[in-house]
Length: 173
Image (tube, rainbow, N blue to C red; front, side):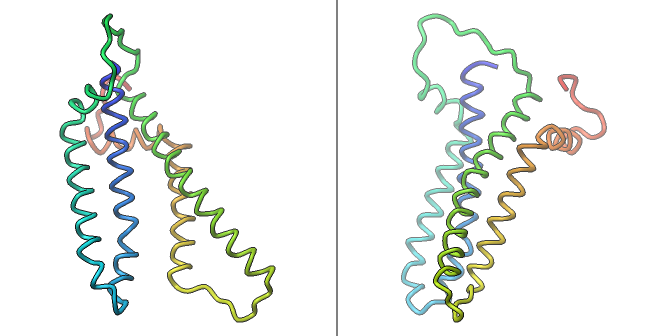
């Protein structure tokens, strides 16, 4: 793989992370609709989603163009790295898992801080709102998915190849 190919893979992984970030904002948007002044914020939220999706589409379609613009110009021709597509896919899945794990660990730290401070304050009247419970469950699911991507990237790669190519797998595996 050339350095441009690696940059393209990194850009497309970034696009996937952006799309998952946009999807994560959907529950907050639905909650805004239920509030009295929430309808005033809807145009801002919709414009944010549209601009973000347009950026995702641009980065996905023109990933090689953007990668070439981001990489410095080299005076000598670069040698290609000995990485086949199967290895690159496994590496990409592992990196996505690490990206999700970092976000999940931050969320876990947040929720543990909230729960410990409430427990120390000994507030018998405190109870978690349904939104908070859903956010905690979402964090646990995010951690589980990220660990699955990190620990089982080879199995997921095989599953992707099986779905993409049928029973016959490419020769590079």
